[in-house]
View 1: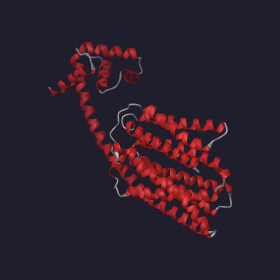
View 2: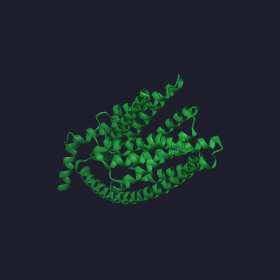
View 3: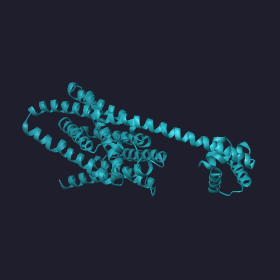
View 4: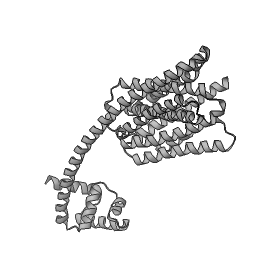
Length: 376
């Protein structure tokens, strides 16, 4: 009994560490370097997969695996992010999320975890443990992939799609579970789709907490996501099964009806709340992009006209003028060479010639010269 409690505590702590590492990686890299965030999350997912595969080759120890795999994944995140500066949260529709909706989402998460946990305990046997572990690993991969999509794109574009998955997963999973319970394959597929839908809900709660609470994200994720989910697992896998067993065979009848009703309520309410936020975010993003594009195009037009005058004044060639303009805009010499389809040495030669003609020595000198010319 003591060893089981220690193992359960180790698993819980490992997932706390993993969730905190996710929060730090997303908060640090989502704004300034989304491409690196993609690689970091994929690498973390790959490490978890390799560790799981290694355990499956030998004599599998499921209890040890579910504690070690999250820790290895978290270690990969921590090493990859390193000392990266923390970015300010990017603006999105979720920044204006009414605070009273967060408890609603947490309540939905608690209900669906209870339904899933109670279903597992009532219908599964010890021989199915390998199947559930395999499904756990698969769902972990899904979380990593969806995290990449959500945080690299500002979340709004993928919110509606994610909640369609939630609706489809809960409704179809419960339908297969209770209307085709005589079919073993349909039953297992039903459990799988419910678990995948639960993962979507967990991910969106995680994303909301991480973006809304800023610097307090790791602590908030523990308090608002992991603690409610831990309590719901105690209810769904512990207290409710004991109560069902004590009440006799009649418990199976009301459980089926209750689970189906709860699943439909979760699906409908979650879809209404999150699809409205997603559509609002899409509208806001569209208006924001239009304004930003108009402002950027006007500024680019002014800079282009200004550089035409500078090129004429200092006698720059067309390629020198283009190189100087891109360098002024912040492009590296390597990127400029790629855009011009020339070698790096050629671009550097053009830049040195430009410096010589204009009498400058650095990018800052170029910026100052453009500012003086613009002021004149």
